[in-house]
Structure formats: structure tokens, C-alpha cells
Image (cartoon, rainbow, N blue to C red; front, side, top):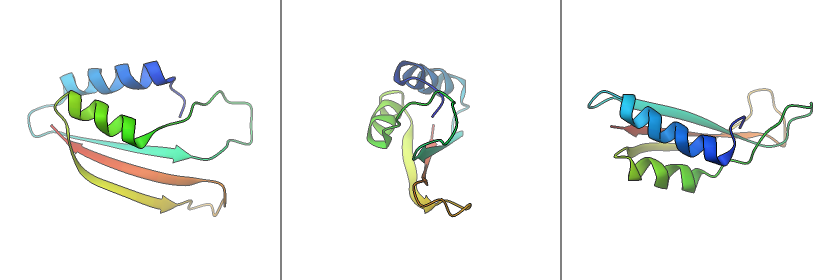
Length: 83
């Protein structure tokens, strides 16, 4: 993830305020290392889900998926929330 934990929290809060009633938020979390010099931060799905819930978003989908480029050290976690 390219956002620090503090930025991740602030983003959930901001997006939750911008969503229409019955709107959806879909987040794809990348797990694994980058092979270049980009600054990245760990992501925690449980924390993301808890913070979304605090801001009135209900988890409706949580799905894990392998990497489409077949990188063994990368996997994806998609979270879908409803306002």
C-alpha cells in the first residue's frame, strides 16, 4: 500500500463521508514485497474492516486472490463495503 497507516485511516473516514446512502466502496489490498524503490506500508485487512465499520460501512465481501502475474510472493485481498 502506498499510504501510511495514518493516511489509510484518514482515507476510510473521508471516503465514508463522501459515499451516497447505499453506495459501495471496493478496496483491493496488495500483500507482498515490491521489487523496486517505492515506499510502501503494510496493510491489515482486519484493521481496515474495523475502521470502516466505525464509520458506518458494512463489509459485504472479503475475497483472497493470487497474483495474475503469477508472482509467488504477492497476493490480493478485495474488500467490499456498503454505506
